[in-house]
Length: 276
Image (cartoon, rainbow, N blue to C red; front, side, top):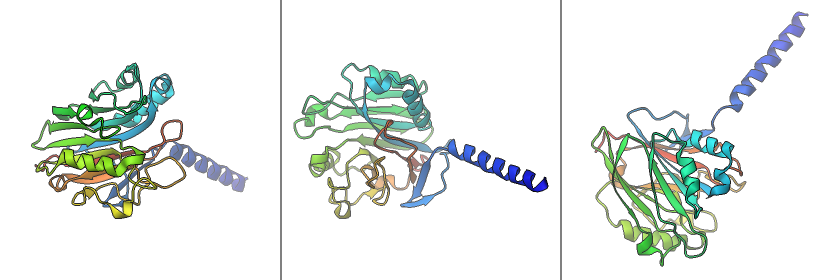
């Protein structure tokens, strides 16, 4: 009888562990490419994320479970970028935005050289203040499928200011798109962060022979998988210039994603705003 009871306790313990683990969010966090234990950013750090939601339009926006899921995952970041918004009605992003009452957002123009158009949305909370922004679509639509959106922020309680560029490069012209992005940014003496689905791996781009932003830090390193597919590719990137390196702490990948939610994982980085 005692032996049977012990077996029952063991089985119950295993079941409890399985239940607890099943509810855990899968987040991998890295420092210089080495995986470390995950931890949420502290109150005095700035977290910035980017996520390609794969054809985010009215169909996905109509599914309450998906919207709830996106809301749960994205709300914890001070700034987050949503890519691949495809919706001529403009209602899908409005539905998603209702999940974030503490965030404002900027929406780019619809961009694309074919009938398929995409937008970027940059959400931000009161940890930062919007300074200026520029949508490069009208200037560069003839040269690239999806020109970048540039946004400049000031930290609310600190001296740090920085500029974000988000871009979703075309798989067929990654090199050309990154050439244009380099021309747009130029040799900035300010803190600059690039985030987005750069398609910078696989057959689209030779990650072992990087020829763009060569003096910058490619934060999301080549060994990191950012896609839901069985293939292992680092399409999604975060790149920072040398002025920004003293603020950079670490980056992470949220891979608690299935194919119905997106074909990309969320990537993020954490920064220390106390350094100018």
